[in-house]
Image (cartoon, rainbow, N blue to C red; front, side, top):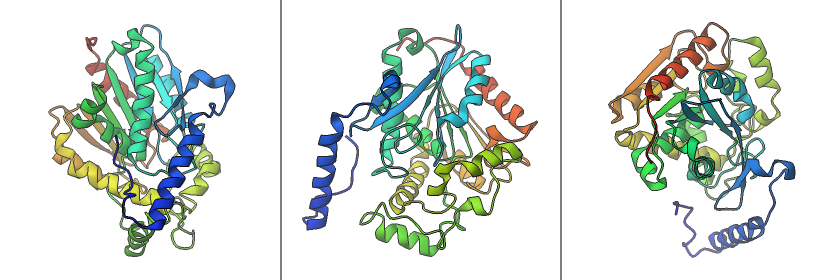
Length: 337
């Protein structure tokens, strides 16, 4: 269904890779969810990997928002966002992508970026199929950083048609749309292109690239910055150790999102911090210029760092209010399909 790594080259290594993957699928299909008492909070994807999700309902909701987190984090960092949206009349569905948070899968490893897209639609279709009232509501995607990139691919016209899901709006904050030259050095690019397929799980050593977390803050709010620095999952990225295969998939997905920008007809709001050192605002602006949407807004937030929804006030409150107000204006009716 999705494009996967080519295993038909006839080489022994590719054949073994295909066999190992097939065996892994066989053994994973019968696995139980990672936490038995949270069985209703997991959905299995096509590879038998259990994906965690959590619903945060609002009384008499006027819309439903599906939140997609960024690289090396999980949905728990968006509970305050869910509360804000609940207070504004939106039900919220949080999820952990494959290899993140409470979801199954090898930490920080993905065979193909479309697996993340499948994760999102697996949760979306599961949630909507078991609640007709929720399925009838206007629906929105909200993604941050790599989650913004995932959300952009999900909201593309062709992807909506493929999965049979229509979106009323897309919101992205600090989306990863172009590679930072300071991180995507010629050596790192050579490393990704050369070893990304042969040894995808190999990590980039910290002495080669310690990651942007050593150079930049994610938030002007000290408490948010401290929580970020103490998160053990950051060992795999901003503290060094990003898997080469994942880096290659990110680069390919960025190129794809930009190449297919004309196929983005969904209404969207794109926000980017003016002082973001993790993802480049130029990428968001360039993508915005090329999209085909007739209802599109791109805003640079002066003085803001990477995590707009975790920034110090008044920025955080202004960003959250902007997001909920934008959604409210587009949640004016109910769906017939």
